[in-house]
Image 1 (cartoon, helix red, strand yellow):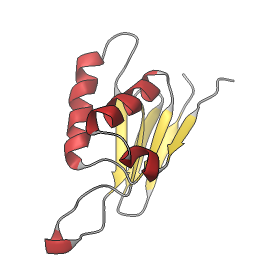
Image 2 (cartoon, one colour):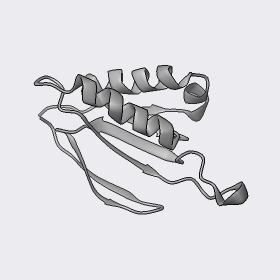
Image 3 (cartoon, rainbow, N blue to C red):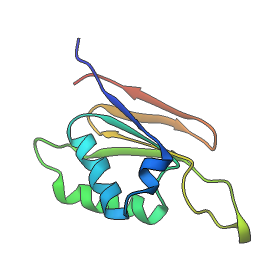
Length: 111
């Protein structure tokens, strides 16, 4: 039976990084086959940048990512800032089957 590693990253660690450091940290972890769970999540802009960065690295050895997150609670002026939690994993291992404001259901399978 193959093992799947999950990295649970605190908001303190993520908040201490620049946007590019976060994206590289996440993408490097996922490229290794890990599922990365970020407390506090990524901003919508960082999520878009992560997807763009991932698209440049997709190939035979790297199938891409699956990303899902809880949206942030609406704040001042009804604006959303960050997701509350972001789950990112290799596209060939993780598949989100259901998502709403308080629940993410995912199927994780060994390759």
